[in-house]
Image (cartoon, rainbow, N blue to C red):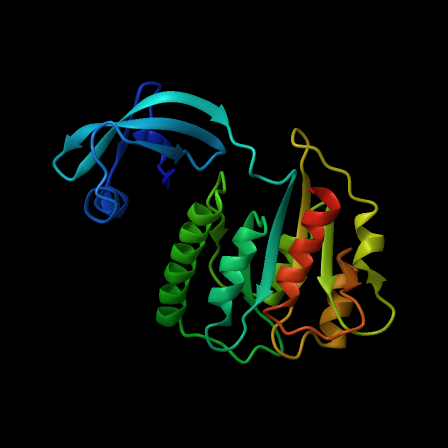
Amino acid sequence: MPRFFVPSENINDRQIRITGSDAAHITRSLRMAKGEKLTVCDMHSAEYECEIAGFENTDVLLDVISVCEGNTEPPYKVTLFQALPKSDKMDFIVQKAVETGVFEIVPFISERCISRPEPKSARSKLERWNKIAHEAAKQCGRGIVPQVKPICQYKEALALAADAKHSILFYEGDGVRSLKDVLEGVRCTKDEPAVISVIVGAEGGFSINEVAEASKLGIVPTGLGNRILRCETAPIVALSALSYALEL
């Protein structure tokens, strides 16, 4: 059944209005007709089973058949803090992070980042990343659309990450705790989700000074095994491990 995200202001108990590109997709691409059914998510995990009631100019009007709480969100809220990689690797990271359950994504610039976009380019990238997040959330059946936040600097990212109850930074150096060991201390339920920050470097990882800076804020340097992973692989492995340990 086709699935669409609709802002809460376009939803009431009996009828929903779909506008813009989604409405065009329903009418022009899917060629759906009055009486056909689809699913609407309100971006806050509520799911509405709907039937097309009609069309008004370029909008699609839906009758609500039933509503329920979605069951596709994990029992934890993980923010991925991702140092900017080269080229279009961030596109892949955003897509797969959404599929593996991320709550939001914060891109940042660290000491070893090669990619350092100018403000105009950064705005364009942010718009594209959020579009990718939206499409990925729709494709994999998420109950929310994870947001990609504006690019920030490393110190700001650390300050934000340290606010979570569980904050981990992935580092390939010696003396780090294993992810398995760290996750043993995490407890979560759907009613009381764990809040987790995951920090991943770009090509070249983090410097010793950056790791020390994170440690001072209570962020735990953590390993992902004996192999060195690419910067676009590490966040997906980490998020998959979280899903296995805390959700599956």
